[in-house]
Length: 61
Image (cartoon, rainbow, N blue to C red; front, side, top):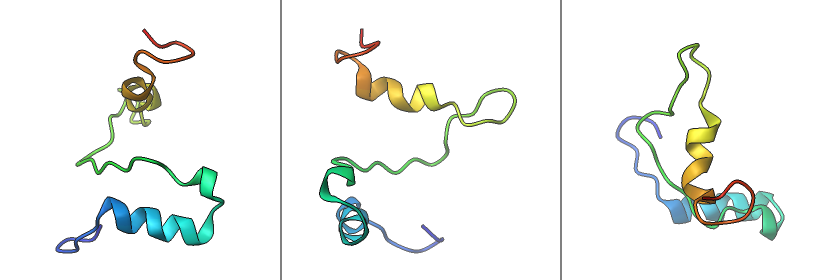
């Protein structure tokens, strides 16, 4: 969100619900200060996915 703006997970989900099929709307929304990045500056997607896969299906430990 822009500086000084308030944004809630419910507001994001409501916005997406109007534009996406219900099964595509995320069940959980988290706000981060910054995205994890690799040394090359690319977004480290695995670090974003790991908490959701822990103890579950493919690759879950």
